[in-house]
Image (cartoon, rainbow, N blue to C red):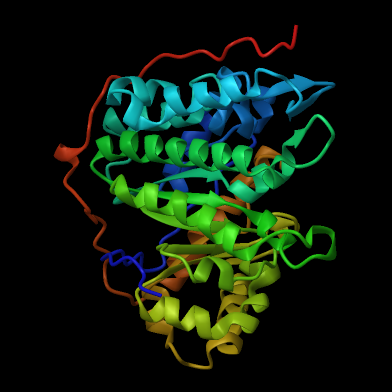
Length: 392
């Protein structure tokens, strides 16, 4: 596999996965700025309510076209409706960039302010002069398999098994990721967009025997290639013990995992992981757990756990210096369902573990450019409210 080339060497820097347990952006951004200043991320705030669900953050075009409806407190696609072909046609006419100018495309496809207030506040904060130490900025979207298995048709069957609807999901996610990258390029930092797809763990399960490995890979590669074409780095995050050979065979820059709980699941795919690292790939080691009591943990204890994991996985090849150079530190998963005190403690452990790992390492060069920030399209950030999604 030919991985995309880049000079991205994080040198053990820390970042987050996405969600935080706050209602307001100011508190979330302050926590990120304090602990993750080199690769900050925009915060998802699920405690604000249903508006922050991934439906509105990443799939709003499907709602606007009438493809998604809320029925009995669940989002569905009613394939029995005679208007479905017309709505599918409307989607492709309205939401793919070839069918509109850049300003209209961004307005239609990027996360709406009501659903992703953290994204807009994050962008505005950096453009106003905050987080000047950031060399990269991180965004995230839900993965196509996770979305496709969650959403169902009128009979309760996941829409992932309908090729036409699966393709709509993939294209919607790809364009959302491209919008995030395009807007984040305005900051002068290089965007990294993680695709969060823990449902890859379903592949090979007796409950999902009809899942096709090649289809999973093709869908992810569609999104990765769209992110790359926007001038951003791309990665995959999974907080389950998935078949790591699936993402490691794709053209991505970063593999992100819950290394605290599932790190040894990489043993079955160590050859693929070594090829990924030899080609310059980066691993984001989620070594700070989000389910354990964070007050019972210490930076030194987490550091020793990571060293033990590396010794078991790699046996010195590649060496520690290479793993630090091509490594990042993160929490194991998002923190949106925790309380604020635990979230603060976890971010403190994350930044502390990053500093411990980087002791004695060369100073990090923060700026990585695929194209200069001046070449990035700079439209005005559109103000857009979500439509009424009532089925009446």
